[in-house]
Image (cartoon, rainbow, N blue to C red; front, side, top):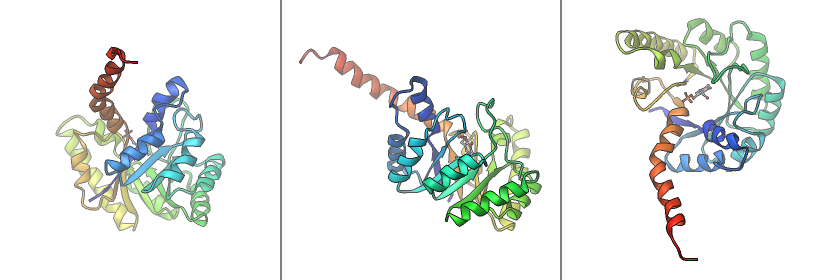
Length: 241
Ligand code: PXP
């Protein structure tokens, strides 16, 4: 059975919409752990659009399950990650314009930089995962760069129209999973997974971890809305001092 990593970035997105203190992603991480999260994942972006440096530090102090620090492969981010010392660092490509992480890391093209980053993180006692497209060349390059695991990008699967397109994408994704394991890498996956599409990916026998954010945070808003309104209504309509 794969571990469930809960990505809490979009709790911080709501907070940053007002640049206030709520909702606190640290609090969300505690509730996610109560719900059974096996890992908490956060992405400290260079533009700090959601998670802030303070979140990374407080998450490190409070999270009791595996902590995945997702970041770009830059000196600034590696310095912060080594200072925070999470369980894992997940290296991803980053562009200011993108709405979310759009593609996998081009490990083939950036082999030397990534190998140096992996070595630095290993020396600090941090396990390293690389977010890559489900392609043989990228997986082989991740192995050559010394990564411990790869997170295969499930975006193409999630975006594929229903059968036969989705079945074809899934078949080629499964092949990428086999190649990952043949290289001795731990197999993780994520991006675009939802309550409707997660099962086929979760059932891949070699799968060790799924990282899911947007769909869980979206559902949390919906299942929590009635209660939140009931609590506010009670305050608005109760006349006692
Ligand atoms: N894995 C990586 C590398 C990501 O960048 C993201 C998005 O932050 C996720 C997983 C989670 O994707 P989603 O929010 O679509 O579940």
